[in-house]
Each structure stands twice: as C-alpha cells, then as structure tokens.
Image 1 (cartoon, rainbow, N blue to C red):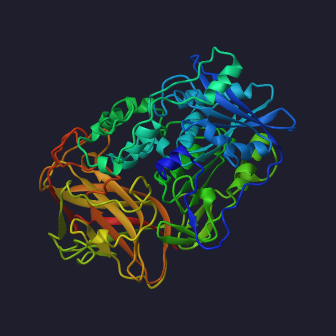
Image 2 (cartoon, rainbow, N blue to C red; image 1 turned 60 degrees about the vertical axis):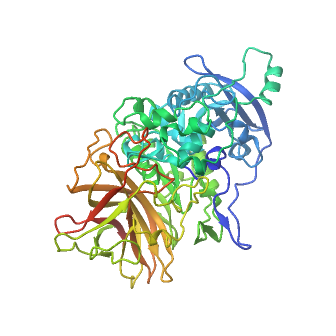
Image 3 (tube, one colour; image 1 turned 120 degrees about the vertical axis):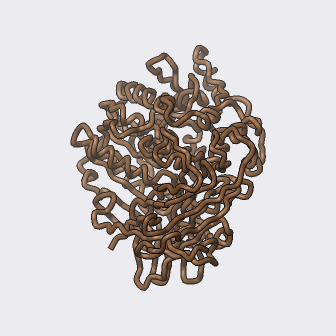
Length: 615
C-alpha cells in the first residue's frame, strides 16, 4: 500500500532508480489539447457537505466529454503541476475532476480514513455525470488511498461509473485480513509507517474554505489555506521504541487522529466494517485495471480483488478485470527504466507503456472506441530475474504447488547453523529449533515492502540479519536448473512458546552463489490470531500449535546455482510493532518479557513453506 510517506503524499514520485545512461521511463503521449483549470468548485454530497474539486478542461475538445475522477486526501493542489496525472488525461481530451476528500484541505466535513469514501464517491460521480459538459460516463483513477476509495465506490455500482484504473488498493480488502487501509498484517500493526502516516496525513485538524463568500475572495483564500497546525518534527525512528505503543502519536505531539482507535479496537468490532472495506459478498459492475508491484504491501489482495470483481460482476462488462504487476514498490509501475536497480538488486529492463494501456482502457469504456482493450491479457507480470510476461489467470493454472520442509539437527540458529529446506518431512521425533525472543532487542527490519524513515524498502542483502541467534535459517541445496516461483505463498509452522502470545515472522530469501541473500517476501502472524482475527486464542506453554502465515505473493526466478532460504523469527522492528509476550492488550503495555519460542519439524508436525512453482 505504501512506498513511503512521501509516496503516499505525492503518489507520482519516483521509486525506481536507474543507472548509467539507460533509457528512462516511458512517458505519457504528448498532449492533444491545452488545458483550462477551474479551481475549487464545490460539489454537494447527500448530507449537504461540500467537497472542493478542481476541474481540468481540454480547450477546444467537442463537448459533451467523458470525465476522469481522482479523489485524494493528500491535497488536490499537488495534481496541478506539469506532467501530473490530471494534466495527462485532460491533455488527451478528458474532463478531469480532482477532489479533496471529506475533511481534508478545502473540503468540508470530518476526516476518518475511508469512512465516507464510498458514498461521497457515488455522489461525486452523480454530480459529474449530470453536468452539461459531461457525456454521462465517468472513469476513476489513482493509487494507494486513491485506489482504495475507488474500490469502495465500485461496490456502490453507480451506473455512470464506467471504468476504473485502481492502483495499489490491497488495503481495501477486508476479506484479506488486513483491515481497512492495510495497516495490519497477521493482526500486527504496521508501526513505523503507521506512526508517520497518522501524524502527517490522517490529522483531524481542519480549516476548510468558507463557501458563503464571493468567489474571487474564495479563490484568493484558497491559495493561502492551510489545514491547521503542522505537527512538530520529531525523530520517529527513535520514537517508535517508546511504550506504550498507543501513546506514540501524543508522545510525539501529533495532531488528533484515529490512531488510537486503530490500535485498540478489537477486530470483531463492527467499527471496522463502518470504514467501508470490501468483502466477498460485495458486487461490482465496472471494468477495471488493477495495478500493483511485488514489493507493494497488499499485492496479493490486489489480485484477489481483481478476481472478486470479475466473479461478482453483475453484468458482462463488469467481468473485464485485468492486472499489471511490476517488480518495484508502492505506486511505481510507470517509473521502470531500461536498467532498473531496486533496493540492492538489479532488475533489468522494467519499462512498460502503462500510459498507453491506461488511455486505451478509458477510450474503450468511456468513449466507446473499438480498440480491442477488452481483449487485453488478463495479466501482465514482471518475473524478477526474467522480465515481463503475459498470463491469462491468477493463480497460474500450470502451477505446481510444492512443499519445502524445514529440517535441522536442532541448531538452525543463524546462517552458520544446520537448518535445511528439504523435499520431504523429517522422520525424527523431537526434532525442533528454539530461539529466545526479547522485545528489547528485536530483529531489525531490512528491506521489504515498505520504507519509512531509516527503513529502506525493496530487496537487500540479509546476510547481517542472518548472523543473529534469534533468527532460524533454513536453506535448500543449490538448483542445478532454474526454478520460477510465481503466485501466492504460505508458510505452515508448528510452534510452541513459553508465552501466552507471541509473534512469528517468516522471510523468503533468494541466495546467490556469492552468498548475497535478497529478501523476496515476508509475513508475520500474532499467535493469538492463528484461528481468526475476530476470536483470539492464547497459547499454553509447551503445547504445539499450527500457524499458517500469509507470505502474500511474488514472481521470482531462482537462477541455476541459487538457493531458496527461509528465515524464521519473532520480530521485524520497527516495521511491525513488537509483541511484548504478556498476552495482554500489547498496545497499552510497557513491560516486555522474553519468550522461548520453538519451531517443530517432525513427521507429526511437519513445518513447511508452500511455493507456487511454475514449470
């Protein structure tokens, strides 16, 4: 869901770096029209709240025209710059509406993350479709929060909502177990990014434009408008070590937010449903492109949503759902270069002509242009280590679901231990590995699907992490032939603990012949949520429990001579909040205790990773 807080506030920023003089990203096509901007037009919602909206008109285009709607909590003014998405679409002959969501910047109302976005989006489409310059067809566009709000709108099925380009919207899927906004994984709060996001972007401080003044005065005031006091700068990389976790926004003098509600509300509480997440019973009727990347949080949910929208479509047109999946981070698909380096790993030529695909999609569904967009491939995926490829379904029908089992002589601690990944479960009874997890010295986050502050995202060499004795390391033999892993993944661990509750983390790693160990994907599960998020169940010391840890999804080619490695531990801090091992609320506690955690791998308790191997 997030590349960085900067990414969330400015979704079109660069995420992928290129080296040398290689060709850069494929740009959008040249504009066909000059653009006229009507600033700060107020659009009424059903409860009378007015939402401020910028309207971009292609000068000289014959009206009525189709409309592209972008709804943002990050300030619609950021879309006014040259080269923005709004100007790209307007330059191709679309009216573009960019709207501050309820309770943000110039719009009225009170902001709660996504709480009103389905209904407000519906009302915005209603207003736009009825204007004299509108053809009556509205498309939607945007990434991250802007994509999640599109999903909510799509579930309302406005008849004028005729197409969507939904980017990085995995956080919208309540059925994915992440809750609205994607702030939890396996029941564990995404701490470092969450603290920064709630302080910087989810403030309830609000100073909306007055609407009962002359328009000329209103526009002058709009240029000076601020949203209220900015939070003071604080060292958040240091602050995340503070306890209790629920007090961190206040401890860093942040603004009023819903941070405390997100941390303290039980997952069984109906409040979560009030935020408008998408569930399996929702229905849809809008042709959509779903965009994500392999190091984007929620990429598995994005692809699940694609399938859900096709399966639950109420008409034939709604069954047209396709996806584009790149190798990078959050909201970065359009930024691929000829010689991309993401994190510490070379990815090669990651370019894709995304803008041509987007415009072709809108032309087909908003203008009725017979351009064959409905016959585009179901999937375009970037196989890391190979390149772009087209597919016709997700997961791939030819997948060979393959289990690799954990094995050791009882000393898998660190990469210097004896942990192995093998093709069959070990027969020995009593075979296990143990480690001590102390929340005061957690395993540090290095790379992965989100960067904030000192956390770098993407693939990075995990060799230093793998020297720790609280990290169990299991490695396969080198592959004589290459192995492609493409699809959703899961780790099944049989565990026990001295604590009533603790966390378990799993990381999939690609080990090169020179020993460099690049993280591919990772997951976490709070043991109390092993049965469900809604019904926590605590552990008894010494008892063995099955944990099924979601490892999301990937597409990676393990080249000849490479090895697959699995790291198992109990923390990845500060990306995730630390489990203090007490069995209490965790969010309001200040006294951590150490836990002895055990991973079993016997014939009776065969811990393994389930991989989608593609022939």
